[in-house]
Length: 183
Image (cartoon, rainbow, N blue to C red; front, side):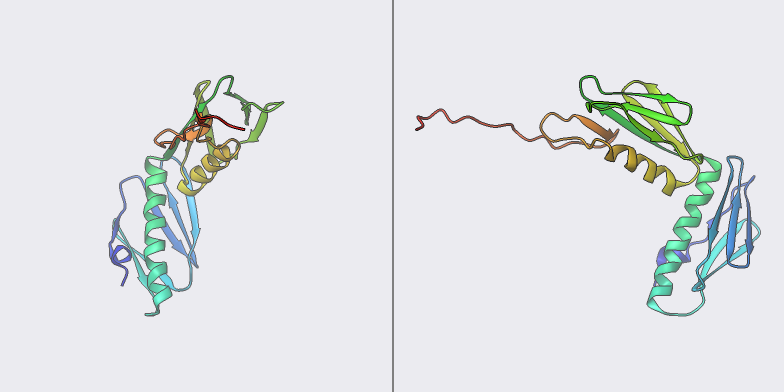
């Protein structure tokens, strides 16, 4: 049984939740998010409490109940507080700049890498070596951060590349030359 799926979600003031024919929409001060509901789960709104229930007792349905409840809780947090990810750029000459809706990254290639930022996410460049990705959709913020990080993953020898702010790069020792004879 899904213990998380059974927990009710409290709807804060200023947030409206509407359920209509297989679609749920959550509206708050930061924006609006919509989610298509699977037929295995049903959502009920009673006052300021949101509950997710299963329609049958199959194992997959119970798993989808927990998933739907977690996604709905993330949607409510997104429209009230929003989500953000911080990225750091490490390396000599590596830097970032924003030009309109395009992120321009100098990452040691022969020309700058250009990344078009989706309209649902905002990217800020507080310093030339740090990025701040903000949005109301947790999945979208995470996928944009992962796509930017993938442009130049941090390498284990010098630590150059793009990494999450809280990420720790395990460093490897370089080549060790033997002090013995040889051929």
